[in-house]
Length: 114
Length: 110
Image (cartoon, rainbow over all chains, first blue to last red; front, side, top):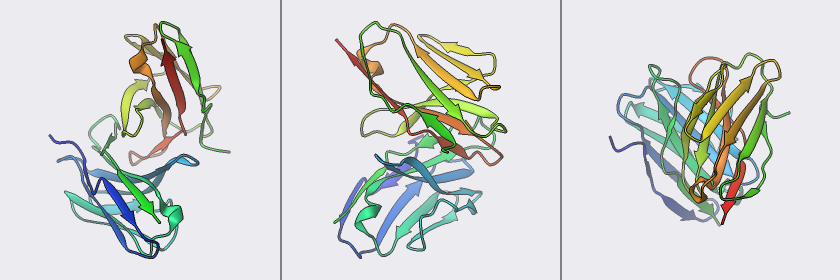
């Protein structure tokens, strides 16, 4: 298996632009998680899905952030409009309810908002 | 108070040293515990689970004290390749949702 796939790996954009981050979880995993990591705040859970349904979005910072999972093999995290304080590394992770709770992370998307 | 607290370090140790990291968690209902490792500019990866009786994996030993809500990781005979950030992780409630500490940075030097 290729593991969790994220795209793009790097994104530089200007304040006010829309940003879309993409994730393909490991095949067969029924949980998908979006995290944000910064030096100041560490790794923060933004939202997670189970069987494509959002379960907990309490970590989503504000209405500018939205996430979707239209099918078991694809999810997006959208920021519109983006702001400089959104600059961070965004990780997607997946896990299986039949496993031992181990989450497998993608390589992350490094987002810079100018 | 943060759900999972760790000393951020950095811990700078010579090669071959023994080093220990500690972590405390706030929710007494937490049921599973882990240590993840994150290399610079990489994603976190599971290092080991932490069991109530304590467990060992080669040079790494993890221990859990539920009464004190305290988790530890001991690394013996540290190698240069052990240099990384070690994240204390807790599972609380259902749903495979993990809570990560901010991590402890380890630098192993010649």
